Length: 239
Image (cartoon, rainbow, N blue to C red; front, side, top):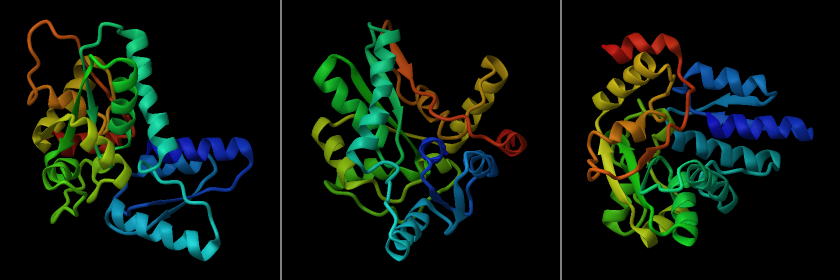
């Protein structure tokens, strides 16, 4: 949702036609907001990986330029500016908790912090039904998950990127797997207590703070990474 809207917005400003491929399971709010920026949206496949394969097919058939949502140095660098902005606001930051899907944001943050603020610890939060980075780090290489839960659609990636994995393997962030129920509880708490609308992937990092328990006195920031949530889903989430 974030990547597609950013790409569609800037392509529209530059007068460049853009085609976005999303899985059929994508929440309609992401489709509508992306189309609102003038993009052509194609719904194909049941998972990110199937949509990605279709996008690569269109790339060849229509001679398009492919923009990967996470496994690209420029995209990782852009997502890594989250760490820069956090430190501008919280210079005493001890720990940054980052949601992880394909690994773009955590790879960018790890790279920037290692170079500019090596004292800050990076913690990665993955949905328990799509812990592809943890599996890759354990295996020493990216691997396909045997089963993928798509509830946390913004982080539901069967296989992490080659480039993002290489950076994670180099810097070895602490990874935590967050159960679906805890994510739902966090989404409701953010909405009811803080007035924050977060999609499942957006609530992932702050939900991880119930699994990852930092030491007392540590300054910890969790990235709330997306608010592309259909309000109609809250009844399902509450249940």
